[in-house]
Structure formats: C-alpha cells, structure tokens
Length: 52
Ligand SMILES: [Zn+2]
Ligand SMILES: [Zn+2]
Image (cartoon, rainbow, N blue to C red; front, side, top):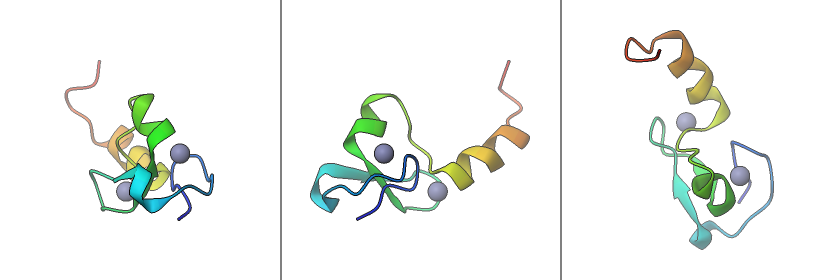
C-alpha cells in the first residue's frame, strides 16, 4: 500500500492506520511520530487548540 504521509510504497502489514481517517501510514513515518496522513495533518494544523 502507499503511505499517505510520505508516499512510499510499503507493506500494509508493516504500517499503521491514520488516526484521523484510518488510511495507511507506513512504519517509517510512524517511527518519526507521524500518526496522521498529509490531509489529516493539514486539517489538524488548522484546528488544534492545544498547539503552541
Ligand atoms: Zn510513510
Ligand atoms: Zn488521515
């Protein structure tokens, strides 16, 4: 499957679902602390009252 955060093609069994929409996030991104796909991350930035 294609990681929706970095765009790399990775095994689905070695990734995690996006916390926002459940789409595939690869293990590499997850290890970097990425829990949201690009779309959800962008949306999350706009409406993050806890940020900062
Ligand atoms: Zn990735
Ligand atoms: Zn998402």
